[in-house]
Structure formats: structure tokens, C-alpha cells
Length: 262
Ligand code: G
Ligand code: G
Ligand code: MN
Ligand code: NA
Image (tube, rainbow, N blue to C red):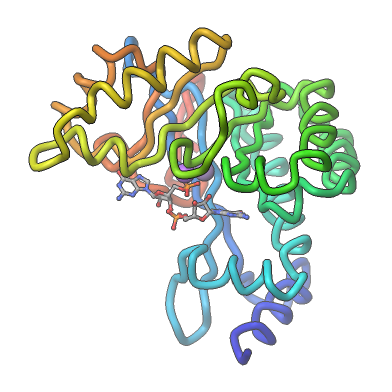
């Protein structure tokens, strides 16, 4: 609960020039396997806590979700990512940035209004913003979530299903969802490596074929070695992310294609 109060203050003080910003966005490239080129970035929040060091989202996002502070966290993630997109775009470097949304965010149309406002304010094209929603969030409250995702898609914001395979989406549900990308959870990717479970290639192949038959692009998460990357490419996976190419890093250390260093 101390942490919650501190998070509240970190959110309050953002924009205050006398305070050191504590929340930051890091970015990890999404690589097109066929060309090995960076075709997008995923934005991942971090909290540079004054005494506890750099905290990953797992250390504070669930807390924010339970306390209702998540909307403010999401607002920060979206605003910072859109602002950074505008900076990169001004430098001639434009690949889409994907922001993670929580279950709470996508259960309300307010997030769509927020996104529209931010894109307009910063002069960023909707096609440069993507959102990632976990499979669990999608099925938890479908009647609220689907209209929100439909509005986002209509705006031109691409929607991805995150952590796919960990939830319980049925094949018919997948067909009806307004999503453009499916992200295979990293547990399935880990299984492709040495010491992984037998039959894991068949599982990934089935996910790829299913996604492609519905016109979805497939991204694999958590790729840590070359053999796994080659297996994924052979199985038809379109894009991948992972430590093999890059760890999530601050914008200053990220060099999207199309220009010189930042
Ligand atoms: O960066 P890391 O692997 O620790 O991220 C862990 C999880 O936190 C990921 O599943 C990701 O979806 C989630 N996450 C990262 N950044 C954000 C964010 O800005 N908002 C929300 N709601 N979740 C995030
Ligand atoms: O949104 P999601 O929960 O999928 O967030 C991706 C998380 O996975 C981030 O927290 C990121 O730091 C982490 N991650 C990214 N690449 C790798 C990787 O190659 N291996 C592992 N173990 N984790 C990764
Ligand atoms: Mn994600
Ligand atoms: Na994920």
C-alpha cells in the first residue's frame, strides 16, 4: 500500500519540471522474420522507483488494476508512446508502436476517446498506433470489449491479441473478434527450444494456420535463440520479438528504421 501511494504521487508529478520523472516507456522491436527488419515496436512501461530501482510492470500494474489507478497508468503509457511516435516521425522514422491495454481499459469506450484525442493532439496517424489486449481480457467481458475494439479498428488502430494460447478463446470467437494480429505467448516459444515439450511444433503450427485462415498476422514473443527463430519462420510465423534481437530499452537507445540515430 506504500507502493500504491508512491505510484499515485509518481503519476501526479508527471509534467512537473521540478520532479524527476519516474514512469518511463521502454521499446522492444518486432522483427519481420523473412527480412530480419524492424517493422514495429512494443511499448513496455517501467517505474524508476527512487529506492527500489527499475520496476517491471508485474511489480505495479496488478496493483494499479486493483485500485482503479490503471486508467492513469494507461493514459501515461499512451501519451508517452504517442509523443515518442511524433518525435520519431519528425525524424523520418516511422514504424508502428504497440501499447498494452488492461482488461479494465478495454471494457470502457473512454479509452477510445483518449486515443483519438492523443493522436489528434500530437498529429500522429492512427495507423502508427497499435494496441495489445490479452486473450483473457478479451473473453472476460466480451460484450463490452468487442465494441471498444471495433471502434479502435474503425479509427485505424490495429488490435493484437496478446499472450495467445493462455486463455480460452474458441475458434469461432477468434473469427468474430476485430483483431489484426495474434501474439503467441512465450511459453509456446520456449517449448520449441531444447528441453521443450514434444509436439510443441504441432501446437504452434496449428495456431499459425488458424490465425492465417482468419487473415491475422502472427507474432511470436520471447525468442531467445537462432534455432527457435528459424523454427518459427519455417512454421509460418510472420514476426517475432525477443532478447535474440533486443531487450526493451528507452527511446534514446532505440533506432527505428528510416533514419539516422536519434
Ligand atoms: O516488460 P515485461 O515483460 O515485464 O512486461 C510484463 C507484462 O506487463 C507484459 O505482459 C505486458 O503486457 C504488461 N505491460 C507492459 N507495459 C504495460 C503497460 O503500459 N500497461 C499495461 N496495462 N500492461 C503493460
Ligand atoms: O505484453 P507481454 O506480457 O507479452 O510483454 C512482453 C514481456 O516479455 C516484456 O516484459 C519483456 O520484457 C519480456 N520479454 C521480451 N523478450 C523476451 C525474451 O526474449 N525472453 C523473455 N523471457 N522475456 C522477454
Ligand atoms: Mn504485449
Ligand atoms: Na505477451
